[in-house]
Amino acid sequence: MASLSQFLLFFSFLFCLKNTFPVLGFQSNFALFPVAKDAATLQYVARISHGAPLGSTDLVVDLGGSFLWMDCNSGHVSSSYRLISSCSVNCSRAKFHDLGSTSCLLNTNCYVSPYNGVTGSTSVGELVEDVIAVDSVDPSDVGQSTTVDHFLFACAPTFHLQGLASGAKGMMGLGKASISLPSQLSSSIGHPQKFSVCLSSSTGVLLTGSGDTVFGTKIARSLAYTPLITKQNDYLINVQSIKINGRRLAVHEQGKLEAKLSTVVPYTTMVSSVYAIFSKAYVEAATKMNMTRVETVAPFGLCFSSKGPLVPEIDLVLQSEMVKWRIQGRNSMVKVSEESMCLGFLDGGLEQSSPIVIGGLQMEDNLLEFDIGSSMLGFSSSLLLKETTCSSSLQDSKLKQFI
Image 1: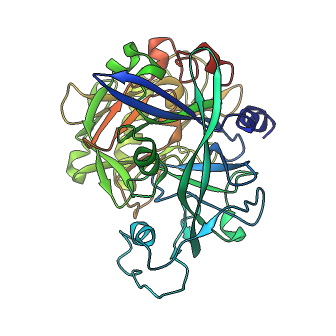
Image 2: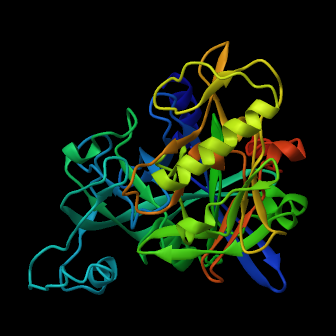
């Protein structure tokens, strides 16, 4: 965690970036959070500054999380947070999708159910509000710190931190719920209802609002778009077919292939029936490319000699043959030793909730724009093919020194 801690020291001074610029006559805003990958757990960790006195807390990023939750009794303890009443509008907002928990009793606190996306466990937590820091940045200098008041999150018990990266005190939920981080910042700051993630094997970025100015017009305009599906708070896309080196696999017989996007799953997983077809076709393609299979290393199912520069290309064909999410090279293979590498696609078992769960490795160095307002997902495929990465694609040289 040494590199992670060093990277996140940036937040002792700057929690998030807010930049305002004119777009077609109105003001568009964004808030930017550098994200570090924890080498031990392969989780993605961001940091927020909050409370009084102002302090920082590390949180594991969860694409499907309903809201931000943390252990309020360890690490930074704020004296300014306020408990929310069970009969308040904010309590109703927090429980909008929780039909079984809408009771209201006067003079009682609002209890919600923080979800640990890593372990799959749920606990009971109190809904609170506090201030979070938002530091203004312009092209020439760092401005004075401002705050977003009445930011809602949940206080969870300490045992609920099980499975999280060392030092992390909770999770940052990015789901569609009205009190998720993107939803609250959109309402309070007034930026568009969208957010972007650009993850990396070391450092990446989470950005709420419009990211054109940050990533540059060239990259932003190169995004392909596909309909974005939301179920509860998860984000999914429809996969019409899968191709390996241009050959279409016979997975359509397995029914509709919905693919969930997840930042808490390190590698893409497939339901067993789909994985069986996929792995067989991959071995055939690898054999034709003279790749040599070697002994497998857990948790992987297929491993190969690392000699040779090329590996099969994987295409997730979306709404048409013209719209493909291409996965290759570093986004498909995991180096496990100097001599061997393993395919970063795993058998998810018979009862996986979605036929495909796209994991963190496959999303790295791929700019993903979640446009909640229009229910569309923009994706760049690998930025490595454009000779850039998530960290180096940031335009502002003042930010590059921190990313």
